[in-house]
Image (cartoon, rainbow, N blue to C red):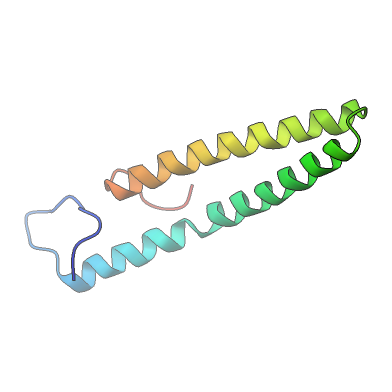
Length: 94
């Protein structure tokens, strides 16, 4: 099996079982963030669709704009955390 993530090696050799355990934990740590992203995407989609149906409603436009901007921020943070975990620089949930 090919190593997907390169973890910093201690003075001893890490077994394949230990690497698998680290990978499994890393994916479990991302579960909450993935669910949050999915929820925010759904919220943003619904708000934008409502706003498009009623372009004169300024409040809907503000909410849609907020949701899309917040989703973008969440995706940036998720990507940053994912890359840090990939490089072994971060462990655990956000």
